[in-house]
Length: 525
Image (cartoon, rainbow, N blue to C red; front, side):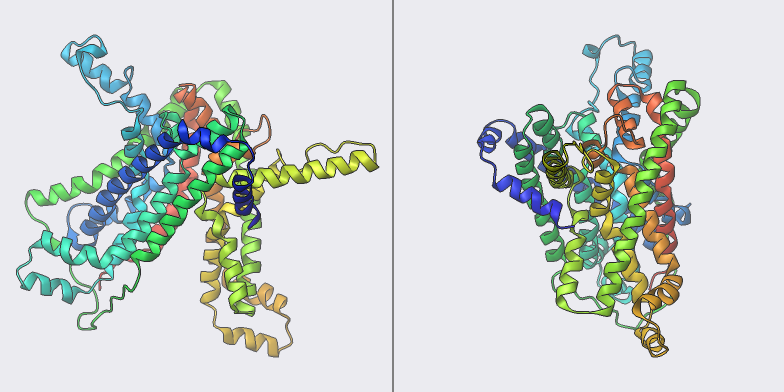
């Protein structure tokens, strides 16, 4: 698991050409500024939507609040590149919105009116904010539900109104949880390629593809990838810093269910609208458009390609899920049997790939596999007189290895949670009855943690179905998945043909949303 990250650093440090100076004087400043602008914009958008909706559904009573509790998570199932082409089809010059405006006001050309450009940095910020705010909504809502009611009521008794209480007490106490959700949203923003590529926004992820494939410089791509790793390190440090010395304890004076504060008059409908708009824009409308396109406008050729791409996606995601869970069981059980610092550090380091953007990790995967293929081929030519060709790179082995490296953290987290619920006394009792550690794992632990294993499989499987940048780099020739097919159709402006694949990805993505909605708390202490 360490090989891909180490390869990126080695490639960047050992480059002999002067590509870095060329990048620094030409495109690198634009890549960096666009990436920073995208991250800042998405951070502002996701915090406003996520924290605001979390506070409303956690503390206030208004129409459809119980539905919004779980429904606000649904945009998490909508990949950014999917919602991007839906709104492009809706808001571009030939789309229904501008067409209706021209018909209504008698406009005939773009010179007659101004309309915001969807294919821009602002458009990318809007699209990613709509699908990434659930990360902050989930963590913030949990934090608000766990806050001391006594402390908040003390603030009200001292003359603080609802808004001041929210800004000066509730939000500061929830800050560590908000930063955790924001860090996850920022990592997903860094990893995004489909949205920024479709909107022609020159971020560092798009720059990796540009430098590698257009400038034919893998060393330059590795150097940009190393710079992205620094961004990831900054995000991780910021997340740790946000939780430094943060300890909030319940006083114990008020424990149990507290009635929600009912809203009256127009406030009830404003709260409803504040929760409904992000849900409608981030999930309901895009899902309706995709359904209409998939069943009414997609061509027969696109449907034929859909089944082939779906089979490829299911194969890759299924393999990645099986291997990731198997490795997670090995690591998690090993750390349980031998709880020492060395194994703990090794386990944490092996799950580092989830913090690395897919395009970055793909460089670290393809380079050592290509070296291994060339070494095997050279040996076979020298001693056997035959050519072995590409055995690993350019095959589904490379894609599966990339998926496992990137998503191992998901399966390891679920497995460790399941193992943590099993008391060590069971291990000792089984060992005294003559069972080996492997027998204990097979006959006791795995049956007892079936739910955690199923969650691990679903999480890895769904993320594999959505993964785009890594798949584009590592896939074999003429090998399409649902994600790559959607991206290619969307770039060719064939939105109706992209709809079946996009709808399938969204449908699969709802699975972890259902799991999350079942585990988040619904009571306030």
